[in-house]
Length: 395
Ligand code: HEC
Image (cartoon, rainbow, N blue to C red; front, side, top):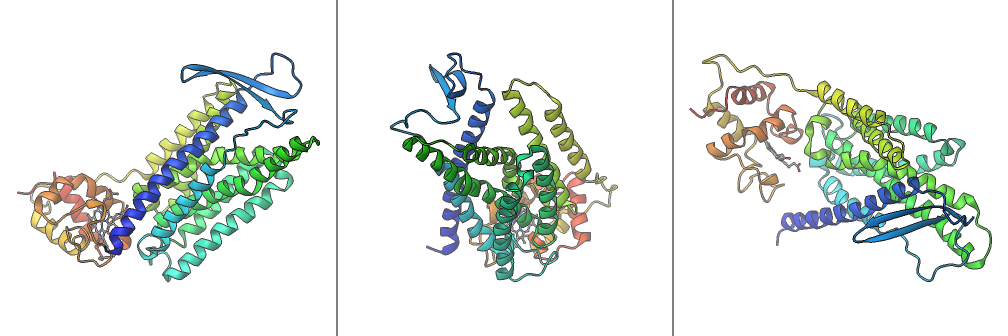
């Protein structure tokens, strides 16, 4: 079996796993943040209980209680949540290695941005992943770490700087995924390096009957709050490869920050809502940011060409056969592809016409050809767009 085919399977299985474990992890994060924020003082006045919640779900009633200083005796069976986080990171990282490092020239490098050799791009990518965690972790341990507002501001500024730098090193798409991988790495490292060790100390203290230092749980709580606010931004970055309108834009870095901000604002709305505070400002602010982005990146309207000036279909076919078909035909001649990418073929008149709406977004945003591998000229791009604007007719 050829390697491109096996790689496709590896890609599918890793992506599948990544989505499943990611849902389990983020689901737990949403659940526990919501639970924490909706806890009410315990009715029976037990001083060990910080708060409790009654819920009805799945055909039964649940009574949850939070013991901030631990129960008097360690329960026989204690449920931990950690493998969701570890597997999300391991599957995501493997997928990133397979695609963005394994095929760095296709996905990570854009010679017009920086003409890097694959090994250089990969080395920078690794260094940035490590640096992201190191810098973040140090900042969390300063007095700012305890100040939610300060951390929000530092987070946005840090993200802006990272987005700006990465979009000057990698392809737009590569930069978005790199930033997503950096945030994802911070989130998983928070679980591995801070939350888990703190919880292990708490459990040991309960088992030995010694006092629990509130610092252990406090640090974990701080990190899990950060993880909660980064979920929506990270998911946006993970689905961004489908939307070249962001990362192909010349202000790609700013769009990244704006969309991440919108995600965090929406999360803030939900977190307040769980506390019983219904403030729609945050939800609205997130919406306003998204609308502003949409207006800002809206493509200029291509006026349909005057009668007789519309490009002919023959012209479109010629452009496609020169600029697209080496990849987009049943047996691509480009050696990098065993099969047409995304199953998109443009080798027959009918395929070109039927898929006009699909390829016009790719051509307009300059996502295709990737890194303009086949040298599509601005004039040719304009002709393709004009043909679609004129009604994509074959006559
Ligand atoms: C060097 C190879 C190559 C060339 C040349 C190329 N493409 Fe692509 N195309 C790709 C790859 C790789 C993908 C899949 C990108 C991804 O993984 O999201 C793709 C995806 C697409 C998609 C599907 C996008 C989606 O996410 O659904 C369309 C439509 C498309 N190309 C159109 C074109 C058009 C039109 C041209 C010519 C102007 C072109 N391509 C030239 C490699 C190429």
